[in-house]
Image (cartoon, rainbow, N blue to C red; front, side):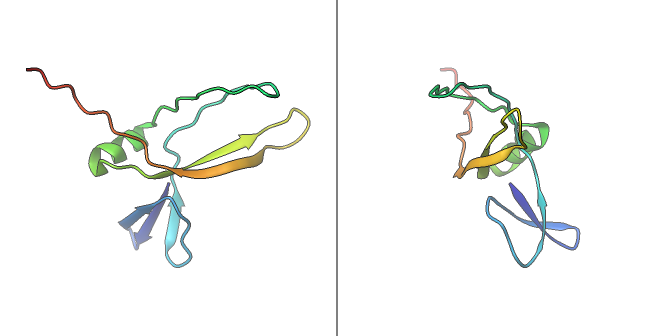
Length: 95
């Protein structure tokens, strides 16, 4: 998630990088998973307080998912990156 500022005023929220305005990267959720070779797993990432606040305010939270691999002998390496738009849970209405 990237926030664009003009002075101190927030003017835009994007999942893309910008070249012209000052940007601030905001982490909206993290999780750690350990997988063996050939193993697959569905992972649920809970939003941080800042992410929940943005989702409540904007109703749509487009963000970039970055997957990194951290072997025990070397530094973490980015493996995959993609843009996500998570669904907002709607409150159940009682009849």
